[in-house]
Length: 121
Image (cartoon, rainbow, N blue to C red; front, side, top):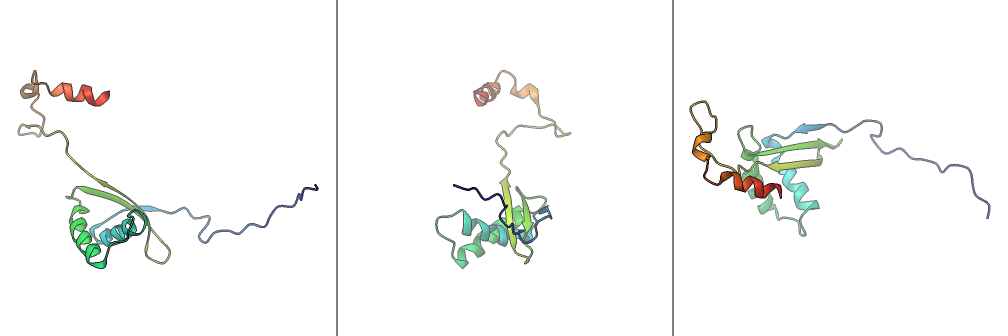
C-alpha cells in the first residue's frame, strides 16, 4: 500500500492563537456558573425556578466576604465558557486570642494532634 506523504489540511479553531484568560468570579457571575453546572455536571438540567434559587444562594457566597471562590473564562459571545468553583469550609475551629492567633495551650494534651495524624494516613 502506498502511503500518502502530503499533510492533511488543517483548520484553525476560532480564536486560536489567543490563550483564554481566567478571571476571578464576582456575584454577578453566579447565574452563569449555575447554568454551566446545570448543563454539564448534573444528570438533568435544572428548571428555571431552581436556577433562580441557586443563583440567589450562590451570589452572596461569591462576594469577597463569602465562602466561595471561582474563576471563569468568558466566551467570545459574552457567555461563560468555563469555570472552576471552590467552597471554603473551616474544618478545624479553634479559639484565638486578641491578635487572632490560635491558643495552643488550650489544645495541648487534648487529643487534637491525633486527628492530624489520622489525616496523614
